[in-house]
Length: 179
Image 1 (cartoon, rainbow, N blue to C red):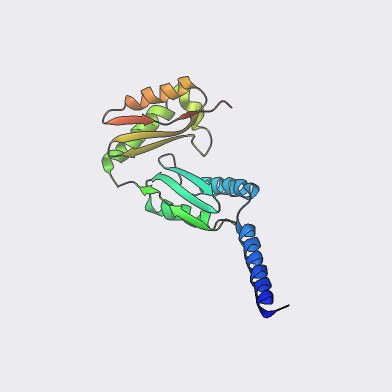
Image 2: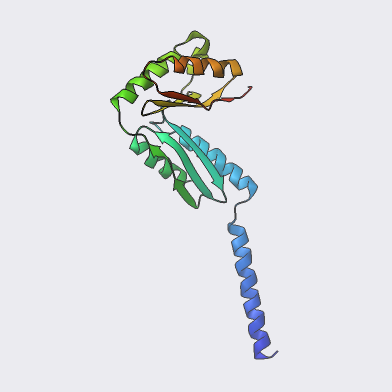
């Protein structure tokens, strides 16, 4: 072999090894499913993740994007820290918004909690540690996130929330999930 052919063969071999290594670093669909399950589990296990916080996430090729709104600034950083430790997560984009402190919003949160979870037809949603209906309040504007069992429950939550005095608007993003 001539020197140029030998050099070409070595360069081709190194390029092939580089492509194989790159392909091995891309997460498979099964590993993305595992990462998604682990992210969900870790976020739900956060000690100060409450009914007035909403955290959503997306998993894409080893990158986890955190979205939502939280009341405590520490919850934003805690969420990022637990997700960052999950095997297979290469990068975390933390787009969680920390809601501004407001005694008026705090009052509305408590009133909304009682209006929704204290209503007899909706009390079944209060059972368990993780509340399925999230109540996000920012400057008197309410966003409802989470899941309910029926369209009637979704409408009932909306009516109950709109009945709380001092609220400027209610956005009902509740999803109906038949279970």
